[in-house]
Amino acid sequence: MNSTTHLTGIVERAANGPVLRTDGGGTWELDNTRQVRKLIGSRVEVVGERSGFNGFVCEQIWPADQPRPTAFKLRIEFLLAAAFVAYGLYATVSAVVSALG
Image 1 (cartoon, rainbow, N blue to C red):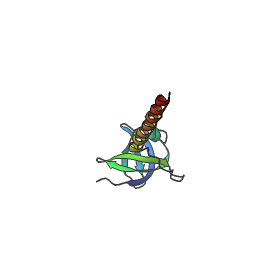
Image 2: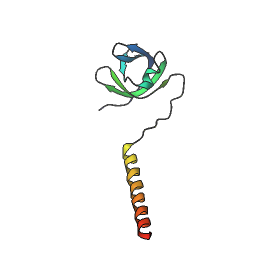
Image 3: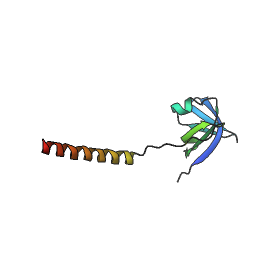
Image 4: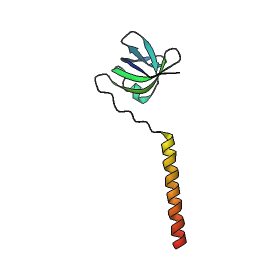
């Protein structure tokens, strides 16, 4: 089972995409996302999970000299539940309006 890991280092370009060179000398291949690409050349902190031998799936990445940003995760379950509730209210209101009209 994977566990969350917190790393600090510098994001650099490599042949296979961005990598994180950690303070301890390790190298991790990062997700090639816009958030990671805009921090190339910067010293960063990364929270995420290992993937394979030296892969790292980023949950959050931010400049090392700044406080950790609050994580925002949109949970699909809540979005689907809200959509069903909204549809139910719409159907109820439509039924009442058509019955009165």
